[in-house]
Length: 180
Image 1 (cartoon, rainbow, N blue to C red):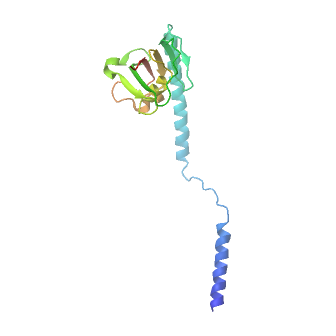
Image 2 (image 1 turned 90 degrees about the vertical axis):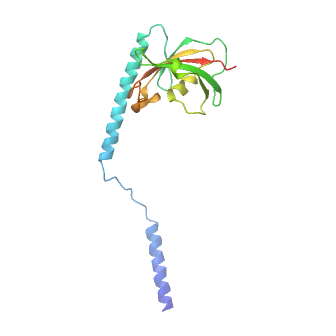
Image 3 (image 1 turned 120 degrees about the vertical axis):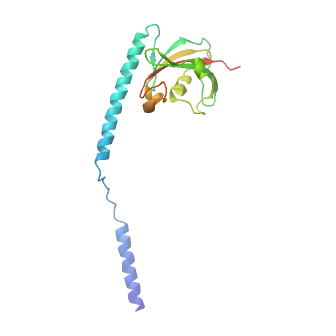
């Protein structure tokens, strides 16, 4: 009796090993509407980005006194005041001080420097709007730079709930102050 039980246990173990070694088949989603939603969302975001890029280029062309440059992150910037000193650009952990104002692309002021105040910031170590983080990395002390940012670097699809609208590209004028 005991050998029969052992034999049955051995067969059962062999069967388990056999089925455990089979390759799993991929499971495909049953709900195709999620895929449609993602494709629609991607198309909508591409169209939004193209519209914002066009608005930013138009704004730069209207501001003929400044020479705008493109950044790798998808925004334009131009120096109003450029430093003649060969000071390195800020790196992670560098303390910086700056003032800024926010305008729409038609140069209507949304937030003045006096409203926003002076900001002390440790580069890449504190929370800050992505637009400001990216802009500060390109500035030396005593420089003033105008940035034209797409909405995804500013306040995105939510706006700020006050003066900045949903998906609104913005113009930031940032002055980096020296730290004594």
